[in-house]
Length: 89
Length: 298
Figure 1: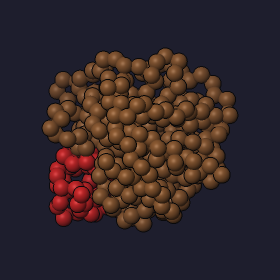
Figure 2: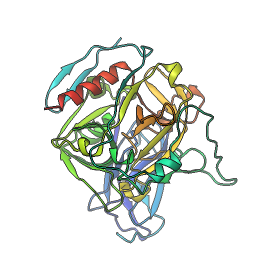
Figure 3: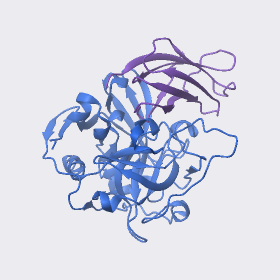
Figure 4: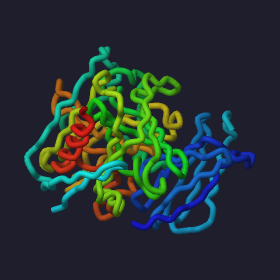
């Protein structure tokens, strides 16, 4: 199976990077592992996706959440904006 | 026929393969030396034997954005995680060259935690994980035990091709924590026996407590392929590696029949079902688990 490495970032409602958010594939057309990837100090993450369409979700310990859609084989940076500013941003 | 080869971050082993319809095989679990009070969660939530699917349609006018959550989200948090069987389930914090991931594992022996292959080796991690923090019975900030491992094993078919049908792995512990907390029994059943069973799944999802809270769901097996089990049980990112376990009858001990690994995207579209899935424990997987547990026995 071919996996495309995709870089991404999670930001809060104000556009600030969010450290420690967990990013998962909430829905997809391909077999993606049901793990979650944690964002680093700069809010960045890397996710490998197979070909297909995917909806990605980000969650924080403070209860903030956001989602976005992407194609697995695309190249642009994935950006997930949380619906509210997390308490632990 | 396929010959599975155990591939470890340290050593190699070889195994004989067996067909999926071979007679049933079981390994007994253990309750653990630490006394466990009766679990209210277990009494109220666990499903046993075979039965009809539990049907909870999504509320009218709402769309489930989390589609490995199938229909209405009826997951339940486990609060008495230090009781059986919940304390045999572990939150995993996986460190890799590419960063940190979260998943789930379960005790299969005194020193052996089973999980999904992609929790120890995957392009996502640029190969092998570097270390995994294993936290049995984790309940939010409360972590009764925390262990760290740098020794993992999976199978060659998984490493070489990431075939979802072979997505299994073991984490090897130095401490025999399973002697204290107990471990799950394992069962390899013929397809006819497994079909229709009610299955229980519990693990540590990202959308509830950021991978620190144990969340449970249950429903019926929808379909059984040669190497995977498909079920209408709500799961989410972080549940990878969770035990899919059954009780053959009232009073029986829990037995794992599959290792959860995929959301609905992992179900072939021509099956015509909306289901999550795990790697089925067939005889060769059963034997591999036994070999890993034996390997960890001093």
